Every structure is written in structure tokens, then in C-alpha cells.
Image 1: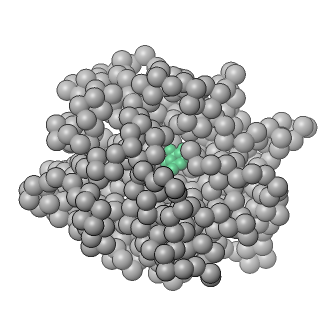
Image 2: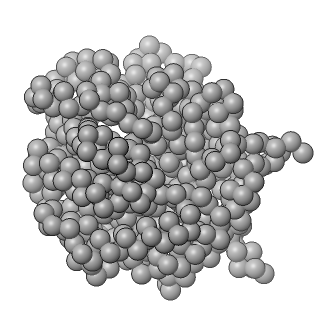
Image 3: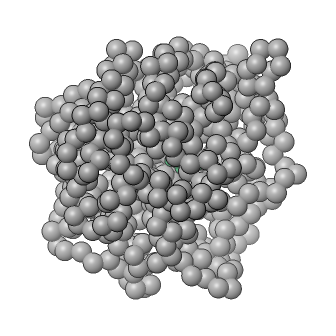
Length: 485
Ligand code: BGC
């Protein structure tokens, strides 16, 4: 049987994130926007499960790393929680530091290479109360935090990432009300976007100036791409195409260009001017952004976004004003999340990165499939969740990623979201994403079938080219597609 082969030294692993895995613990972590949001509206969260315990990594990290070792992964993403590392924004917490030191040492002993991410939607509450990324003081606090991480861990990890999916807290917090502070304010959203890009640039420039020569870590960032498609990509109008462009401007191009190349995409600038959404900035800010230089890029890919000309009768946020989402009933959807399954897009993204970003080395930092009520798929004899649909999802995407690598895409690894089941923000534990099942009643862990499959992949760097597709394994039809949350 023919094999899909990956380059040697390819990174295989999965991602985690502090707020979604650790739980509060007792290290003196200060509150984050998620504690505030949950305390204010616990009913917005699936089954009213909040961020307090999540997957209890704070207590179970040793057992969990044993499991990761058993899976033979050669790399992992972990994150530092800013609120745990520097709870008051001024001083490093000894207990917080020790927690991360222990995890990092254990992973190093296990020869699992580390991607260390600094920010994953988890703004400390004190920083948000100062205005978040809108406020220069918060940006400078973040840079100080980043500097401390560079100092302490720059030689102990392989990759440092400034942030994960920088546009999501903006969409959620300032446009669509699914993150704190639950605002709808287009002008602020652009200001916060600019502040986010500036914070990233300042951290990267500081790293390049003071640390790059002396530490092992490389510097980069993790960006989510959901390329827009006009309707079914066959029958669409001029206005649908305009909507497609608006989505790419707002969601895809706004962040990746300035964060990777130091230059804003001209269409983003034109759009901001046309809608009177230009942020305030100084020429020094632009100089800072211009200087940015990354060693690598992480890309999160789950799905494309199909759009059409705006349909909303009462549009308020800039997305609704310029586009509407389009449900194509011939597409395959992950019905538990409402996300289309389209593996070809991972190929298109890889080729786009090659062309637009000077073939910068990149890895897939998140890709995966969250499924509700996975216990249905438990084998009653072995007790193992047989998540063949997840294996199929990975195979489908890896096949297309492999094609891109063969055509010169500079991809050096693949991380699934996620290593283990975890707290997915407002969705809490509704959909399960992990290779490893987490039982929330007693916090025990168990490999799903996909973990064993991935182990063989990580060991052999290849898989059979003959496999079943996701829809041949589970029924993706006959259910109403959920709204995005
Ligand atoms: C985020 C994760 C989240 C996952 C599933 C990604 O976009 O980075 O934090 O859990 O989506 O919703």
C-alpha cells in the first residue's frame, strides 16, 4: 500500500493553552477576563462550566507528560498564563514561575520540543480594566512580561510565540459579544487591533535585539486563517465577491500582513479609511511595526468561511455591515461546531504562505475536530473512545498538507488541537477535541483511539494513502448546523 511520507524531523504533537487546561490552582494567579465573564454571566457557558478547574493541568501535569511521552510526540505547544506568571503585572510570582519551570524541565527531559505561547485570549483582568490592547501602558506591561519570559525560558524552549489567534479576542470582545468585555464598537475594535499588532511587534523587536543571539528559542506568532469563499464558489454575484473581500480584509489580512511583514495590507487600510475606522497611532508605532522579523509562523486552520453579500436588516458590527455568512448545503460541516470540513484549504493556505510571505518556515499550530458526546463511540469491551472520525479528519488534512510540502511549502510540523479534552471558552466541555479523554468527574485520563494512531504517525512519519473520509464514518447530515459561538 502506498504511503504518505513526511520530511524527517517533522514536528508531530498537539497544542494546549493555559486558561483551557490548567485551572486556577494555588499559585496566586490573578483574575482574567474569563473569571470576570463567568462570574457575570455563567449562563452563557455550556452547562455553566467555568474556568476554575478545566483539565486540572496544574495538578496533573506529571501524569499528563507521561501520557504525552507514551504517544511519542516530539513537540508540544504549552502556554504561559500572564496572570499566573506576573499576577500584579509588576513582579514575577515565584510559585507561578516554579510551575512553568517544572513543566518545561519535564518536557525537556522527555525530549519533547516546546512551543511556548505568551497569550491565548487570557488577558489579566487588571490589564483589561486599563483598556486592554487599547492602552499603551498595557502594551508596555505585556512587553515587560514577554521580556521576563525570554530571560527565564529563552534557552529552555525551542519556539516562542507572541500570541495565538490575535483577531479572536477582538471579534469576540469588541464586535460579536462572545468574549469579555462584550462590546460592539467598530472603532474600538480597530484600535484594539492596532494595539495588538503593536504589542506583538514590540515583543518581537525586543527579542531580536536583546535575546536572539544568545538563546535557543526562535521567535514567531500563531495566526488563524479562515479563507473566504463566495457562496459555493460557482454561482455568485459581484456583491458576493465584495463580501468575500471584506471578510478577508477583516478576518485574514488585517493581522497576518503587519505581524509577519511589518506592512499593513493596502486593502485593509483602504477599508478602514472608507468606513472611518482608522485607529490613532504615532509614526514611532509604525516604525516599530515595520521592524518586525519572525523566524517562523504558526497557522491554525479549521475551516474556510463561505460568505455572501450582506443580508442583515439591522447591521451593527462591521462584519454584518459588509457580509453575511453562507451555508452551502453541499458542503460537509462539523455539525457540533458549525465549521465546514474542507481539507483542500490547508493546501491553499500552505501555498499562499509560500508565495506571500517569502516561504517563511511555518507549522500547523492547530487543526482538529471537536465532537459532542464522544462517549457514544466508546467500545464497551475496552472502554476506549473509538474516534475514527478524528483520525479521518487528520488524514484528510495531512494528505493536502503533504501535497503542499511536495510543492515546496516550507512546513515543518503539525500540531493537533488538542493534546487533551479541554475547556473551550463558552462552549466549555461541550465538544471534545483531545487525543486524550478527560473525565471531568474524577479528572482521570484515557487515550482515545486517535492517540494510538498518532503515535504510529509520529514514530514512522508516514501513513497509508488509503483511508476513509470523515463523512464515511459519521453522519454529518440531518442535524441543524449550530451557530458559531
Ligand atoms: C482556539 C482554541 C479553541 C478552538 C476550538 C481555536 O480557534 O485557538 O482556543 O478551543 O479553536 O474552538
